[in-house]
Image 1 (cartoon, rainbow, N blue to C red):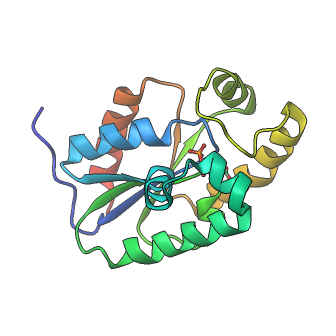
Image 2: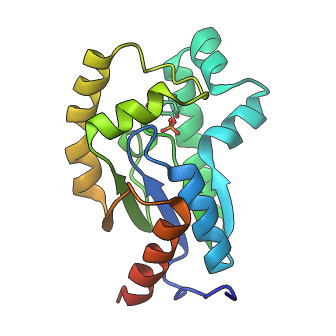
Length: 171
Ligand code: S3P
């Protein structure tokens, strides 16, 4: 299928949601489908710093990481070309994002199962109870800021196609 250009007003498309919901995978598929560039904030920060996110947390602290996230958003806001951006789960809670915000939603048990099987270490995933508390705190915040909320249980390619349709209907 040829890339389908979205309207120009959709200059920045941010994928938001709890860790493990599939922002990076879905974001990459969506960018490809729209013919947009794709950026993953965790990957960008890790590349910039020459350290994994896990090591940044360990060696420099969460506060330092959050500053990097805010600086990166400020830079991205200056980029004139359309972008699909997969955010780290805590990023949209640090800084107000401008553009179209897509919340990939999964219920807590679904996320927990995915995180248990995920090889990417999450510094904030310590145990089920504290993860659940974080989920309960964040889920309504993601929901409140989202332009669209999408159930994230389908395959990433399928979700990207659903999003292309949703975005094309956006006034
Ligand atoms: C975080 C989520 C992680 C990463 C960091 C902090 C969070 O990204 O940014 O470990 O605060 O939820 P993912 O959402 O891609 O796992």
